[in-house]
Figure (cartoon, rainbow, N blue to C red):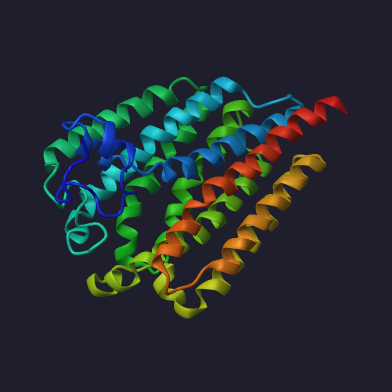
Length: 313
């Protein structure tokens, strides 16, 4: 049975699996972790796959380590949930003043602050257990991500570029995916990370178009507000830079033609987003933002296919 509108989160997809099938007692916590909207997990997961697949290409492996991919999937799920929980704890007063977020579990009273903190600790513990399955160097790389994650929620209060900090956080998986295979940090991984960071700035600028009016009222800053009517051009700049930097990562890894075909298809998808985005259409902005799940998949498939094809040559 679906709950009443008083307990359903406004910015979740109507009739999502949490609202329809999850136990009633668990729903507020699943919403706190954003399990009713998995797009963030996908966007955290794809850079991990990119890093693991690029490392496989570099070493001549036919595919990325399946065990590492599974660990990254679990890690992306729980750490995205932990990040959202922490973000909601920090932003609970702001969220209560924004129409799109006022119905979230904390500002609406579905979850207490003490309950949210306990849930955050549980998710971080699972994330730590996942990370401990890797080598010592990769564990250190993963642990270092906690610093930008902890500072991200405060960036919208002090800078017009909080999307940069989100990019720093959401792209970290590229470093973990690479180091999990290589046991080191090398130039191709850095380039891959920077490309993912630029991609994140672009898609999160599109996402932030939904909240321009409310953000202005409560004093929250974003690149969407900063760019204004020039948002299409600026997103185009960041997406173009994404392709150039990712291309350099492929070159440094001696990737084959299949990887570049995947990059070209990825570029085509990003170009479509730039062509379609409109600063005054929040519903369209959300659809374009969510389409980055497919964009990340396209590039991932190109890398994985290239790793296999290169072993046949």
